[in-house]
Image (cartoon, rainbow, N blue to C red):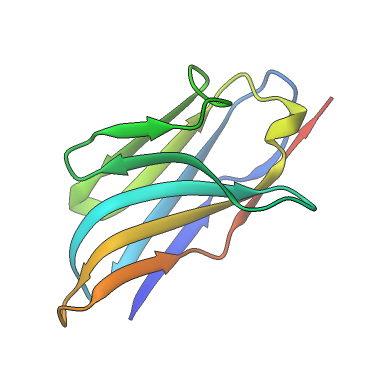
Length: 120
């Protein structure tokens, strides 16, 4: 079984910064991609940023230039540095990990989510 634990959410004013962390643990053989998604009230979950094991990154247009995704392969950890936050960034942010479990099964795990609130 694989567990993802997110941290770093909170309340911040417009223009402020937050850093989210995600740590994966459990029966992991390989992590291919890790990503952050978010879901605002009344909206569908959307991709924020993804980083592959080759450190290729993909960002949603709405966060390009403001957010930076990174990972620490040795710790099975991922981070999201969020700068110049806007009220529209308010959402629950979820960590996602994809790869292969130690038993050889496909891994697609989600964290419990961490709330980010940006006040105007």
